[in-house]
Length: 177
Image (tube, rainbow, N blue to C red):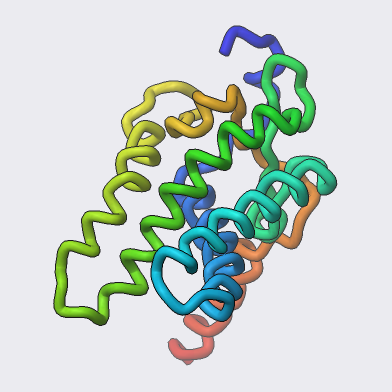
């Protein structure tokens, strides 16, 4: 990260990134549940829909997926200060899509008596834990390092986190009265 542009970009917390990942994951998981009947077919559909949403749509939408748009974030190639190319996005999202697909398959299997489905969440936890242990200004998860990307804040989006925080503050003040 030796780019002079990186310090000028707004930092995004790991919690906001996780929330955007959950929004995208649920938006892809629900249709994949309807398309497949067994876990393997659902996971394949999940990964395919994931790549469409997180590569094709991100490429056309200036670095934003649905979750990143909702929380005012975008993906940037810090060396070129622009939206990453298809190759970088494919490397990044293929790894993350497989990990997220396994995690959502594990979540879907929680109703069964086999507790081993929790192990399916381990690859996603390992991938994202790299960002939690990073001391850099822009913590990168393993999939970010593979793709050579960073996630930065932007003014373009819906600001869902700010709107939810205002709503909760309003509800809390109404309850106190």
